[in-house]
Length: 211
Length: 211
DNA sequence: TTAAAACCTAGGGATTACCCTTAGTTATGT
DNA sequence: ACATAACTAAGGGTAATCCCTAGGTTTTAA
Image 1 (tube, each protein chain N blue to C red):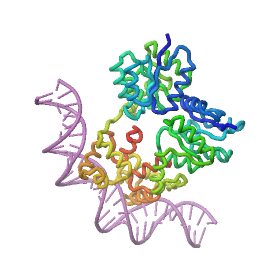
Image 2 (tube, each protein chain N blue to C red):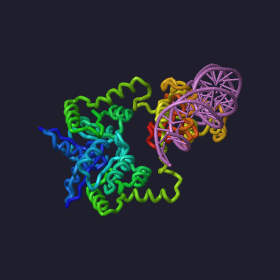
Image 3 (cartoon, rainbow over the protein chains, first blue to last red):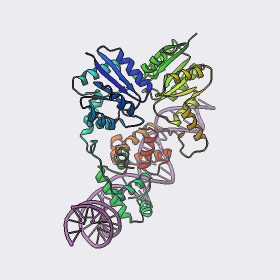
Image 4 (cartoon, helix red, strand yellow):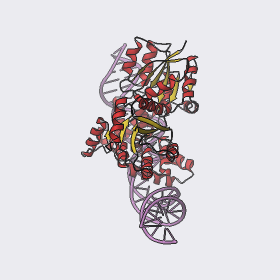
């Protein structure tokens, strides 16, 4: 009994590349390939594979969100993330949402096979370098995807002003409040986001889409 | 007489994907595939194709730079850029350096064929959406995407440290230089990027993929 | 092989950000 | 109406950032 695999990636050449590689492997059947999240969901109503290779950058639904949706519908599905860049935060968020592994697109045939076999045996597959990075990062704080900070109206306004590279003085004038108040808001934002300074605020704000 | 095509991309699945697609097309011969700029240069000493599909993000030499080098060595070579993201500035720079066209990695078989035929006939090939974007840009839009700042080795090191939310003092210790030197580098970075402060540095660095 | 350009280095001085504490004044919701 | 959260803002520091200037080194190109 062969392992049924599907692939979702909006880059057609990636889609066909993985398909080609998989077809060269024994005991693996490429069930379906899709170029969008929507197409994946539609196809899965008919046939669900054992394993799905899922790109993180999809045009319609974010790969991280799609992971969650799919696993809700098909809990036994094993999802392996796909991406170009080695963004640790993405890996973590995928895994937090239930993904079983992660592959960079420069992976070779052997890695694909290892990933499929590992995941099919119910174990997680991570490329070595990524393992180390996640370990490094998990020693920090506020790196988990579940953490979703809530800013108040005023804090969001200050955040946006910081993003516009305004000084505290300028923000105060813009919002008709005291410099000291702006500072208080900035301090609260830093505290909530776990940022060390304004650079950290912007990094996390972009990551958590608070702008 | 078939058209000889080579492919350079550090993402192995992309490499194999394009290869697979090209093999399905008539009158086209895949001469060689390479995963790095170095491998491309070495292979070309033996056999040079008519057309090269060249990724922009290579581990060893930047695709834009490699375009220039290759065209110096092989002026009749036609280069078609490959990338995931539709960064107009990259397209412009590739074309400026002599590339004949540009393809996004979500391109289908038909587009690949059209691109090859167009370029083989000595004409430039650009996907429609990209054409429009380049046009939009040249019509004096303020979002100057063509602007691609170049940072020095030291500046890049400081930039990365700033991104890590380190203080100037910590950066100085990390790089074994004076606090004042770090500040000087930061000033130069701000100047080059047109940023008003460190927040601006990070914004533009993320936008221009300087990290 | 020079001269120019680019890069790395770092000082003084002014400004701004950061970090405490404390505390009065609005909204918000049960 | 009453606790809770949010917005406001003061004093008083320390540390970091920002800006200008400039000497020394390395790299690049004529």
